[in-house]
Length: 159
Figure 1 (tube, rainbow, N blue to C red):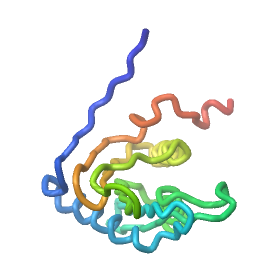
Figure 2: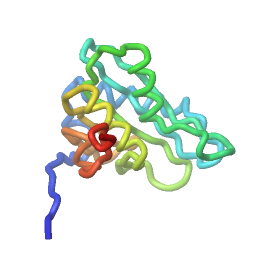
Figure 3: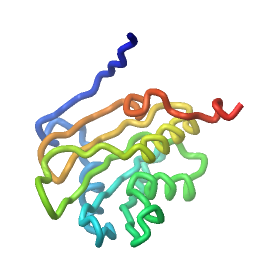
Figure 4: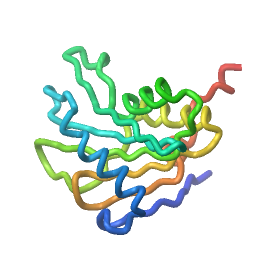
């Protein structure tokens, strides 16, 4: 039986982040307030750091017809690619604010967002670092989204 393993960093809080990662996470945390989540009350914010230093923000936007909504990760990445189509994506910080429950442990991207981030890495031709955290508490750092979706569907699968 094959076993999939990967390394990640888990910090007790944001104090161990580099200043750049701390700033990016702070932007993701800040933007969560702008999310439109009247149904789930689970607001998510994402901040994408581009190689040129630009930070592009996105939030989740819900819709009464659930499949019509968009996650914060795809919102931010779509904006980054639309505004800066040739710019490399360095990192994405993702945070949330839940009206119910705790807000102190990271939430991971959904399957659709994992696939989307993986495709962005393929476009980039390099990994995208992920910084995952709630409004406080633990922080998870991943060097690539491929660790979250090891058997992703790619353009090569289309033949």
